Image (cartoon, rainbow, N blue to C red):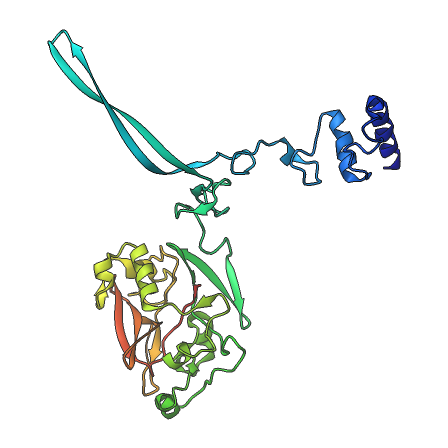
Length: 352
C-alpha cells in the first residue's frame, strides 16, 4: 500500500508542477491537508473520481443524480395540474365558407420530488426509485418466506392465505406467551366453574395425550382473552373480522361472510384437511388451513364430536359469548356462531 501511495504521489507531483504556485503537492484539493480526499483526487487522474463526495470511490460515482438527488432516478414527478388556460382563435375555411373557432390549451403542472410506487423489496413490482408506498405491491408473501415458527417447544407450519399469514396447525402450548402456565387437567366441575373467576384453562381431548399431536389443545375463551397472550410475539388469535378476511380470500362474498350459521359455498371444503380418518371429512385443503375434526369440550367439561367437527375460537366477544368457526363433515360451507366462553375450542394464530 505504501508503495502504491508513493507511486500515486510521485505521479501527481509530475502532473502538477505547473500548479506549484497554487498549492503544494500532494495536497491535490489545496485545503492545506493531505488526507483520503487527496488520494481520491489522485485516482481521478486515472479516469475515476469520487463524484458524490462521500469519501468512497464506488459504483455510485458513476451514476447521474436527478433533480431529486436520486442516483439515476426518474426526476420530479407530476403531482397535480395547477391551471388550464384556453386561448381561442378562429380561421376561415373556404371549402365550407365558414369561420371555425378553436381553443388552444395552455396547462401548468406542479412537479415534486416524490415518486409513489411499491417500496417492498420482496414484491414482484418493487420500484427502487419509489419514495412512498402507493399500495400497488403484488406478489408479496405475507409469511415473509418463512415456513415454520417455534413457540413453547412446539414447531408450527405456516401458510399464506390471501394477504394473511396463518399457523397451519392448532396451538399445543401449555404456557402463555410470558411463560406463565395455563391451568390444565381440570375436572368437569373445575372446567364448568372457570367463568366464576374468568380462569383461562386448557385441555387435551378426552384427557388422552395421544390426541395432542394431531389436534392440539382445547382452550376456553378466557385463555384466548388473557392479556398474557396465547400466541408468540408478532402473532395473535384472529378476530372474527380476520376470519372473514380469510373466508373472502377463498371466494366467500362479503355479505355471506357477515352472516351467521353455515355461509359461503366450498370454503369449508377448502379449509378442511384432506388427511382424515373420518370418511365424512371431505376436505381438499386447497387453502392450506388444514382444519381437522378435533371435537370440543362443552361448558360442563364433557368432550364431543371428535372425528365429526372442528371448532376454532376467534378473539372477538359477543356479549357474554364469543364468535367461533365450525367445520363439519358433510358440509362444504364454514359455520359462524357465537358460543359460551366456557367452551373448549381449538386456537390458531395469525401474524400481526
